[in-house]
Amino acid sequence: EADIYQTPRYLVIGTGKKITLECSQTMGHDKMYWYQQDPGMELHLIHYSYGVNSTEKGDLSSESTVSRIRTEHFPLTLESARPSHTSQYLCASSEVLGEQYFGPGTRLTVT
Amino acid sequence: GDSVTQMEGPVTLSEEAFLTINCTYTATGYPSLFWYVQYPGEGLQLLLKATKADDKGSNKGFEATYRKETTSFHLEKGSVQVSDSAVYFCALSARTGANNLFFGTGTRLTVIP
Image (cartoon, each protein chain N blue to C red):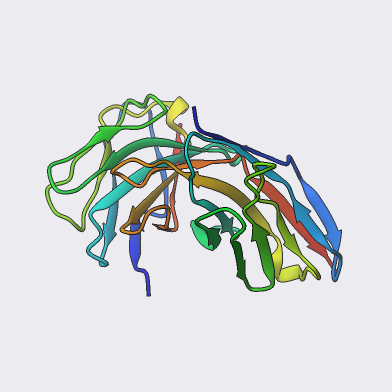
């Protein structure tokens, strides 16, 4: 059973606030990812990690940052939230090529 | 570069109708191909995959065949159910160390009773 968790599921926050979206997995996967999903459903890779102490920027430029100090944990931080950051954020992990396990997502609204 | 082109939706079908969602790809080398499904309010989950030409992936009544000659990986199901209503994503693997995927834009399927 694949277990990957994201908290919070829903977040409404004011402009300028700092937020951290949490992502944890219990499968021991080395590779983890963050995607931004727009209302048109398209997925954009914003960050990924090969393993502990490894982080890379994805295809879509993002003002967010990530860290990977433990295998199971891959949090995403926005230092100063803006309305343009309103979106759904999906976390995923992988061990086998192409097989990614996704969390349920965090729906972020910045007012 | 590598990319996936997916049939645009939305698609609305009656229960028990036949489903086809088209997917074509552009890639260097020989990627693996995938279909993911996203049910309302959830993350994506792997539906099926094919790792080489002529492979057929299948799961839950869905099928897709890796066609190298037409660079396609169309999703089919013979008889859809209301519970199949979801968004379907075609994807191909990038042969990088991070197992990255290139996703299509997604096709929303609604099945009506």
